[in-house]
Every structure is written in structure tokens, then in C-alpha cells.
Length: 239
Image (tube, rainbow, N blue to C red):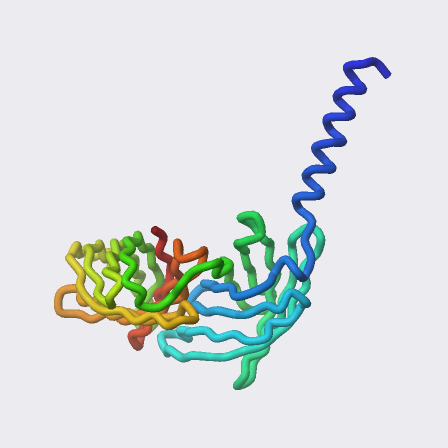
């Protein structure tokens, strides 16, 4: 083997070794509090780093009927940073999904593995953040989409949310409901608990839109779901 070929082999071996080392995951990689958005569901769960989901809660729209659920579960993470989870709903029901970790193992892409269902979503670690009405101002860009199930009307929102840190919302947005476009200023209120979940109500013209949310990514991102009856609309906000 010539010198050039030796160097090529050495470089390739080094890249493989570095890639393998950086990608190595285990159950301990999925640890702490995580938020998620999957279809018309937004929630939060706590993973113990040992394969157990010790607590979880979510807001769900089932064909426009809004409910809250709690759950526990189990998970496994392979060295490749892919994995599988099982969620057991407290009131009955079982959900399974496969996932792949990303964002240096601080994010996750999810797809359900329940026969007959078709759904996917994303999740993110909560990270180090102080939640609650702390007086800290923040501006978010929001994208939400879904439909009104009773009429199968498609809905899209793009909104700027300006939070004053004291429970008040201002900003503006563009709202597409079945192809009818409305651009409007918004105003409203929000509450945020110390566990990084919360609620907001905003005025758009004469309508009030209500949402539940979960804060993730050290306060830089928020998963949101509308809680007005008859809606199946969810999405995310980013600073």
C-alpha cells in the first residue's frame, strides 16, 4: 500500500471512529423533562434515563373534542440514537412510536407505530430555563396549522407573539381559514407555571383564540395547541 493510500485509509478510519463516538446513545441520553408536538397533541414528559417515562401530560384534540390526558411509559434508545417508546394513558389506551434523536441529542423526530394510524411529530428537551411570569420580555414567531374537523376546513396561522413578562400579549398575525385571509393585530393574556406549561388567550378581531403550550429548548421554543372546541390546530413558536 502506497503512502497516499495509507493516509486515505487513516483519514477514513478516523472519520468513522469520530462519527461513531459522537453518535453513541443509550437510555441515559433521553433524560429529564421533554416537550412534544405530534399532530393535534402537545404535551410534556419526564424520562428517568433508565428507560422509564415516570410522568407525562398532554392536551389532545380528537376530531375537535379537546381533552387532557396523563400517562406513563417505557422507552429504549439504541447506540445509533434511534429508539422506541410505549405510552400508557392513565384512563386507558396505549400508544407506540419510533423516534430518532437529533440536535446533539436535544431534539427528537417521532413517528407512531400504531396500526391504522398515521401521525408524526417532534420533541425537544426543556433545557435549563426559569419558567413562570418572571418579568422577562420575549418575542416569538409562530406557525400553527390544522383544520376544523366538522367541516374539514383547513386553517393556517402565522403570528408574532410579543410577551411582556407580566402576562400580556401583543403582536400581529395572518390567519388563513379555508382560503379566506385575515391580517390583524392581536392582544391578550398568558399564564405560565413553574413547570414550563401554560395557557394563552388572544383576541383576533371579535374572536378569542385559546391555547395551551409547553416551553422547551431553554425557553427558545414553544409547542402550542388550540383549545377552542371544534378545532384541531397545533404548531410551534420560536424566538
